[in-house]
Length: 311
Image 1 (cartoon, rainbow, N blue to C red):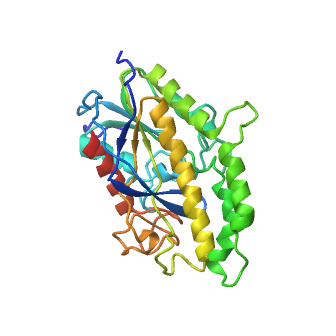
Image 2: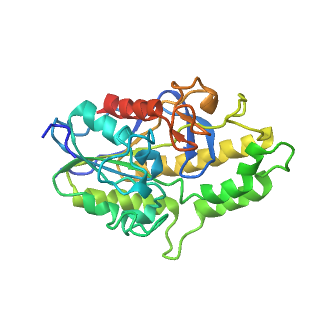
């Protein structure tokens, strides 16, 4: 998709683009997400300039693919939940890039190398990597949350959002989270290594491309309560905060180890409790009309702007 109408060696180290104190969080295709707070610093970018008309490939899960649900992308598989106002589309329009959007809801890191047959058969009949060609100049990677076990954490913690008085989910969820993030898969690769492998393969396929990893928006936060936060206890919020930090640290480290760029979303301290139509994400998907526990139109716009500011 074009919005034009109609061999660079690896960098010496990763570029980290965020504010001095940035809240980062993890959320994917399931109705649960969390928040974290850590301090980072600016580094100078050394990548080639991205020019109008350059090819841009978006690799990712639902945090990249979704936006406003009544604005689906023409020709995309419905199960990918790919919307016209997701951050790849907004970024491509803003910079006049030629977009090939490979992002798809439900995607794990394995969908970089393999077709996607969940949640429906033939959801994505080709691997996401097949979209990357030698002439690609920009690649964004928004993956990792599904691999990190958010669906399993949702089974433990999501009922606590809806029902008051339930026992805390932290005890069981903490061990699940640790295993999903740190244990190797059947091929001996951890989540971090899989992200590293994705970036390295992308570099081989498109030697001149600038590669950008993104983090996940804040969701529920300990210091603010509202209807979207439900009845999660302070202890469960503390667990989710720590869990999210681990996920984003893995993503940031993968960027550093592959001389890529890590861009954290421009988060809001109130998370889901920020003002409707201004907040980056929400839990129930209303009134903004986004997928449950995912970025809103505003959130996708803010992410696109954060990337554009860097470029």
